[in-house]
Image 1 (cartoon, rainbow over the protein chains, first blue to last red):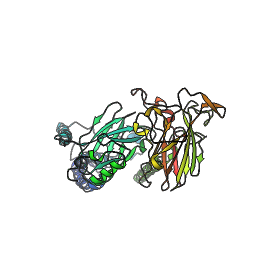
Image 2 (image 1 turned 180 degrees about the vertical axis):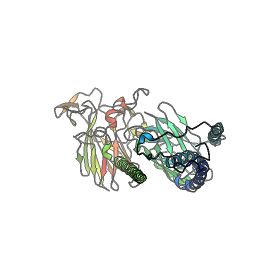
Image 3 (image 1 turned 120 degrees about the vertical axis):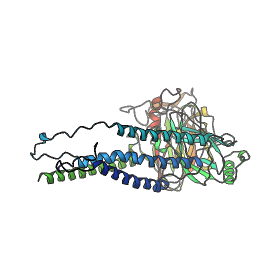
Image 4 (image 1 turned 30 degrees about the vertical axis):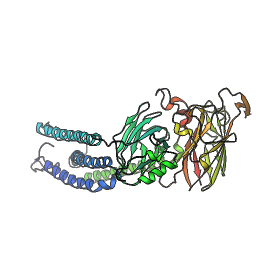
Length: 269
Length: 235
């Protein structure tokens, strides 16, 4: 479709139909509707955010989806319109061999430049957005975070709090206390993903990876899961995450044989 | 007439496409919900019922899975079953006869008894809460599947391995083994549900990660329901 004055198939050569204008209007209307829906439903579909990193991740989900929707619709509306309007119909003779190809599509430099410019600008923006987010999470990290060592093993996450002398299969975190995860694997590649905390990183066998410091700021129960297919019980590789008050955390440390006096500052809990 | 016929075919095509899509979706849901799709289930699997469960761990499958026609007679296995049914809200007593020798744990988390009554067990009649990671032959570890409708249940019991040089002292179904360590522990079940359990000592083959530092033996029997993995059904 290279002209807004193409003839409607079957309507005679003299009738000019503004196909491109039609498609662009349809695309524009659908884009507005879908982007509004994305913005409205984003907060419902996204997981609860219990720290600033998760909030940024949720915002990124909504933003990226809202930006991707018009691009996707641009393709699908054009394809859908073409399939419906320009579908080859059975010729009057009834013989399909009488069907003829439509006019060949010609490259339009302006359209190609526009397409590359728009999608290129979007891609560059997304890269910049990601770098901005990473910068926000890694610059000026809070001092003395609570270090949690996370070990993935087919098919369970286990957590060690070296400063507290506690090991657990449940991830217990104090409210408003910066936490730093160090993640490894005892066997194959796993993916450590904490809903609500915006933490998602690979657990690699043989080395420790450190995640940016996060600070849980909302009490509640969340969960971890493995994001890398890791074998028979991959789907069972999860654990509870409990963000609790400072006093409850100290009680939990005591109950698990640890040293609650090493819990340290809770920064406003 | 041609146009009407074409439109009918068009609608019919859309209807068939929708039907096939819906059928594939239903099939996907059914397959995902089917627990029976998890691994090889040998014919020897049976159900133990009641509040007392007795299991054995053998270094091979000769007793439990038989040598004639068994796919992997050399595989280590729990016996006589990996499908356990126990009553809800009950203290269950488990006895494990451990015939296999020790294989070092990778993760020291599993060297401690957790989730049992009193966080303890007895080994050959003596209470024990923890053992060296090198001493564990296997573990019996129950965990809750990711299902919000089921209560949390976590039990981990390391099973002391027999001495590497222990002579064969007992005969089971014509097969010779060292004298087993007898491990007894209790745990309390909650509401009905289906849990999974398996061993966390790398006692299988390298199938599931061969070549990673030479330390992964989580394949083979470790990754196969009916050998070192199973289900605990609380009814």
